[in-house]
Image (cartoon, rainbow, N blue to C red; front, side):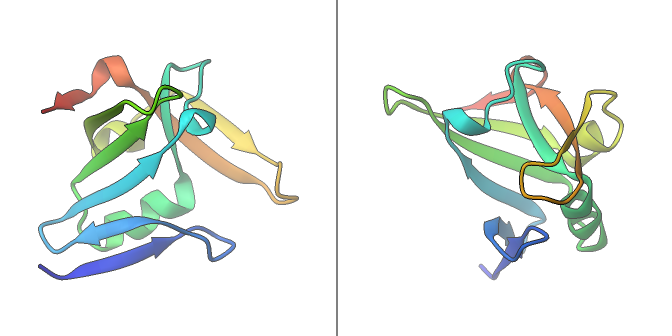
Length: 108
């Protein structure tokens, strides 16, 4: 299997795009957005994934108790999401869209 690293605007790696079109990213409690009860993706990252024909995203979430849950979402869910927020914590505007974990499939 061929994998391609995916980075955000500042060059930090955020996950791997597998050759089967699935983006895999690890998340911790700091990444869980309580307002939308889910995870976000930067619009810039979404555009890059779309150009690389990504269709699905696996979030490997490790909670505060070190329990791991895998969530599956589609890129389309993020692209059409109305849950938006712009992160400015790094000194630049980083618009993001969010999908609730309730709308994702839990993988075994």
